[in-house]
Image (cartoon, rainbow, N blue to C red; front, side, top):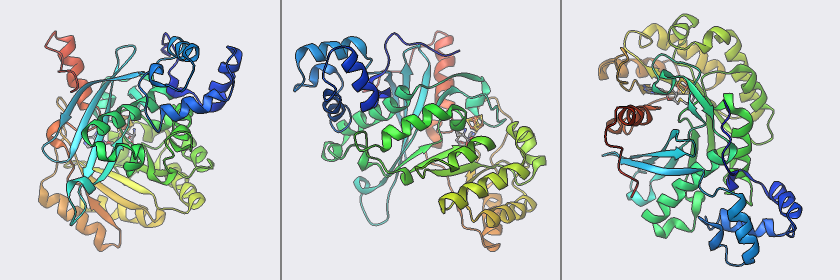
Length: 378
Ligand code: SAH
Ligand code: SF4
């Protein structure tokens, strides 16, 4: 069900691939380098603005390439520190990108840590029982250009909001987390090609160590990622410390149970010599018992992993409940008492439906029902 756009996205190219096409069309190869200076450091929105290129080449670029494979549809600012951005692809599909600002102690908002959370697929085939992205299944993978364009759009928003930091571009972000819609490792090749562009000096020059890929546990791809020369960070969505609990809420566990997932995670950590993160959504009476906390502690210690606890974020139409604050605290205290480093993310942006896939779902429902579409992005 691959989508074939009218024109390829310029953001899916590299200096090599663009160079080849330039030469084939009768333009000098070295022009590719100039195009990339415009695309990333200066974030040109059209070929027309690339003023040191000959007019003929600008016209060729505009004719051959899509400069806006993703377009802003809606922005929702939360009362706290999260901004959710809905982007529309050329086939009408919607994806979500989130900017999270975590203020640093003792400094103003402008010095907060900024993280971008990106999507890799439209929908998701993995069908986790608690997740809005999985509710309506997988529609398609994002292309390389769509993944990169998503980041370019975020930069454009930030440039307008904060001109003083605009010149820093993506460098002014502290982290990229691949935790939006979709299972990143199920779109492995496109994701990795996009992240290489993000990392390249001619691209965003964004360090691999500042990129975290989150997976529900696609074991063969974890092993493949471990072999990549670029050392991206890995987060594993565990959500259950036993096969019994994982099987109940994550169908992927039937294919790749804990006895395969844990050794794969260990192999990754050993290869990159760096700490893994285990994500654990707390859902009442499903995985929030002290027994689960103790079993999770055993896994976390074996993997030398950090545990990130996320109180379940309500999804309309699903039966799960967020545990009380007391139960959340009891769980984190048990982990810490057992020597595990754990954070309890009183998640940011609850009020803007920040959990995976929820904003898209609401907008699609509203549009299908003929309701007023969301306002265009400012
Ligand atoms: N598919 C990948 C990455 C996208 S999901 C993965 O599963 O890891 C990103 C994170 O959001 C995952 O940890 C996922 O479990 C979590 N998530 C999904 N639905 C949620 C909800 N309703 N409340 C809180 N976290 C949720
Ligand atoms: Fe897919 Fe991740 Fe949602 Fe599971 S939690 S359905 S893997 S996006």
